[in-house]
Image: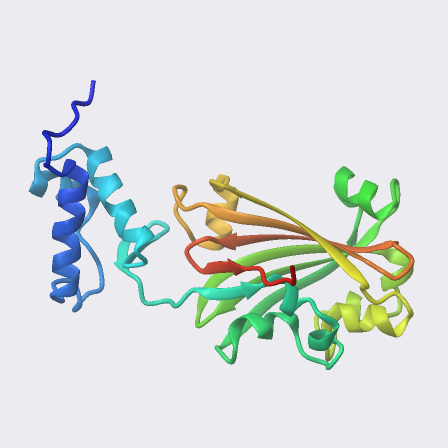
Length: 251
């Protein structure tokens, strides 16, 4: 049973977080950018491993540190990407030949590993697209910004729409897939997004290069044309240490 701290006394994990925060502000870890391991911290502070983890979590919330899969805990140097869901997917963005991801990055460096292939989609995707028993075109993309993996995206498109367009190629051209859909009369007229935050599966943590204790943000976006037909299902897994989600809309 964990005892409550005496009146006026901070919990032990808060005390440890305060000490580490003071060290960070004084530049104690500036040379290497890396904090001592959890094992060393538990020995130094004579505290339980979970107490140290709670202290580190406070520093993560303050955006002072971040965990890197298989490496340790480091001072945060990566500025979170501001993801404005409404602005990035607007016709004003892709209709002008700009990639919707550029709206997030605002000029920051980027790279993408892209695979395209034809495949029978997962059952829930097939049901959404109305293509049960049929193959669809898939675009599997791993996104990097400033050399850091930040998102894994898998998007599916009905084959009768994607065939013969650059959607089936690595480079979709100006405006991306939405501009190519628009050229054949099926440009997105509205979207829906479902959002879930959870801990990653082992394969997901390896793909994104994060620890098993770093939550991922799962966003499933469905695009519909002006007739209400679903023309894309895109499942995006974001590193929660890399993103901040923003939603702006009129009242």
